[in-house]
Length: 481
Ligand SMILES: [Zn+2]
Ligand SMILES: [Zn+2]
Ligand SMILES: [Zn+2]
Image 1 (tube, rainbow, N blue to C red):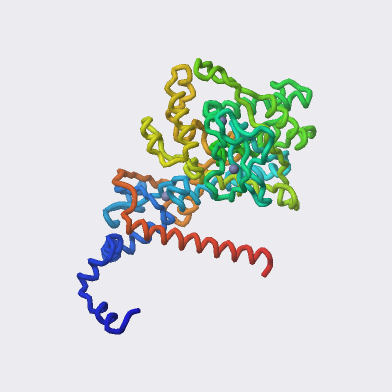
Image 2: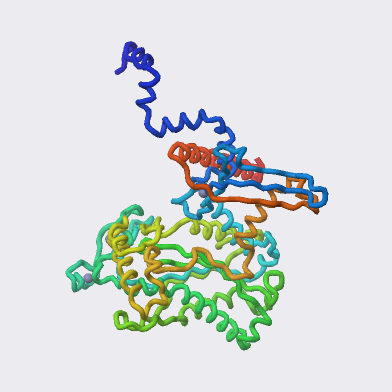
């Protein structure tokens, strides 16, 4: 309970005393806000969306008319706060930089969406082509605890056998809430096939490539033509993302599309239907396998897809697709995964360089066991091609999060270039044909101080709120309110 006297005493505290009581971050905030370039710095951070880990550059750029020598535009960071200019970190991971990861997710959404609906330089005809949303999974490497889901299902209901050879129960009668850390952990770590899991991850990229090859072969067989002739009739395009499951195994979600021989702008032959493609995807997924190199420690393992295989035709929203999987829903679903990393499923998003690094890593015993196996197998010369040590932190999987075939749609680079062009459209000096630009830049640092970080996070939040409001307004307009 505070009395008036106490209040008076407190307000009477000497300025220096009050400053002493502030945290170092608060003191830093006050210092920052009193600096002469503070307003300009705020503007800069706003222009990079409140990036959490900006890259700072110093330098200059001058645009002149090559004929008259007239300076059309000049920019020099010596006029900026601290003599430097921040750039976005462009990290795709939400845990590293939320605003940049959101931008990256947005780009992924457009990249996947344009392959489904057209736009961004892709023909709108693709909406009429056979398109599937396919999920390919890893097989089981041993029983793990499962989330109970909306039905409140029991984790591993009791069967006949009571316990494994290590004396651990083969069943689990619990219902695990979604947030239960037990989910994805094996019932018995000694029964779990860690070697199989690590080798599967290390071979998943080859398995996917082999799958695409087999899919073309099965399409040719279904059409009654040779594989070499297939190219004269159609092209197969795809975009896929890798998603880590709780058990630490990746799944692939892919959009698979059939075009005519000249890509998106040409129609596929009449016999190339969505059903035919689905049949070929199923048979190819079942048939395909790769073999790991032989090692006395592991033998030769056969790598195959798991039994769980989902194949859905994608309906065009433009044609009133409502019940089935629609193109917009698929683009949103796929783009969600690129901002996730193995770090968020309990792994690490930094590289491991020593075995001690595994012991010290803040991961579950399950992931630690998997990392140890990756490290151990990575030291075997006969498995060196699998590069397991370098990819210990990703549990042996060394693929990109998003991969796509050349013909699928646009690229991240093109989307970025379009953004820059859009910004520069307002700059009339660039319309002069004889303009030449001369630039010199150097890296001078990165990241924020604690106080700068807080401010940038506030800016990022404001920008996100603004986007949300704009989205709501757009939706209201669309629904005619
Ligand atoms: Zn960033
Ligand atoms: Zn359980
Ligand atoms: Zn066991």
